[in-house]
Image (cartoon, rainbow, N blue to C red; front, side, top):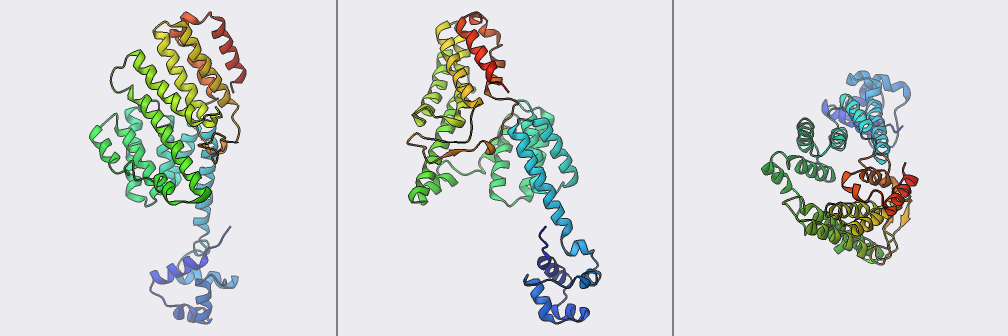
Length: 357
């Protein structure tokens, strides 16, 4: 436990407009000794601590910032536990923990954000009105308190998404608080950095651009009615650009996305009662789901991303199990009834069952 006496002592002295000389005289020591304590070059003799605390009308724990250290340790433990819950898709446990943390530390920005995002992760889509109201209340409070740029970016994003189904004008208000497409941290870093670090920044930026382009293409189909063929084209576009980026099919983390995109295509073909294309899309969806289910820490190897690593510990999910659990659940959709007795379909279900958590 690190004792931060120098900051606390200086703060107490300045708040009460007390000079180093006055404090030294009260303690019967030299002003130089007080100066050393405030520079962190030494500590008072332990017998002086109660006398210093009494002089400033604080406890010894307050003088040594022990209470604040305990707060930091507790919040850090909440953050650590939250990462574990998110990696395991345990959204309800994560929410309960942050509700407890908020009851203890309602003014800490990290705790406010933790609760805000825990509510969002636990809610179904579209977010129910009561949960949306809580997210908005916490987010707007956090924007008033937080000065940390990355935290504010995350909150602005969540407020935009939450307001999108409630108040479009307010959603756009927060959206306009964000940077433009051409002025982002990733864009600037890829332009500024040189050497291998610069290449890595460019690769990371490209990966993010492709990921966002794929998501945007698929999201487009929810805006107005699209035909089956148009939806298939949008999801195929998303698949094509991802597979071009990972030209050796070492797709790593993006196996989840590809599995989902193929599953959506399978549903569209199922609506069209196209047996061959439905089964073909399901085969690809199943293949990538199994890749995701067995994903370990790894290096990407395709030329455009070969300086990027995937670390499982840094990921989180909104569901329990893995992609095979989700695809197995999706296979129960009645729209697949017309192919349910096909040998290919039965084989795929059996393969998924082998890899579920």
